[in-house]
Length: 328
Image (cartoon, rainbow, N blue to C red):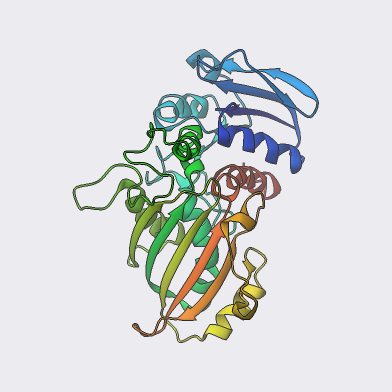
């Protein structure tokens, strides 16, 4: 039995973490919920019991938990994750604060597992998570030379503020979270722009793909787009393989892989969609076809629920991975 903390328990991802913990019946004998000062004192119901959400302070963080599920933003994680770690807790952090630190594990359980040099484990970017799940079996069987991503990301990736901009935009209300209206629009702009012209979101996908797959020499590029969909991200993956493959071989590979769900029947207009991914744990793949412009290159359309597999579910799966494999 474990002592578990959820930080950011009143947020979209924090609420999903609690839902996944309950659904997966993760064993614990003590659960503590934390939030910002603004949300402290709220009641959250879990398994029929009401919990009072506490404000996160250094004193609170300086106690030992078995696991801390952290989803409260980068600044909060930078301040409090090392305190939890020093107190002996394993921190599974959903922010980008530690992802590219060399001594921090960046984990998608279907792809890799933590080595636990440190007791902070980073949850990757939501779009990266769903993308590397189908890339891993391709890497294992054929090898990968190059990946080009184009993402179509839901507004819930921006939290409640993004959802509000979408809903309010339908009423003609100006956006608060985004620089332009998201309703009836598409924004090729997620996170801040960097000097190289890429956005920080795009650079995250590039760097994280290399780290998770342990392929430092792979060529990766990305364009990340916010679209007027509430939940579930879609990613167009263009991948060049080392060894020769066919479309049918790749479909069979995915059909036999327990970590992806193949939906690819164009005669019946069956392919992965955000609306069917929402509320499910699956990573869906389809529209698999040869890229006629590049040798041994294939298109794959991939969808997944960004709040589940892209965040909360992946974090709880890391906890389960450590528990089942006795890695701690």
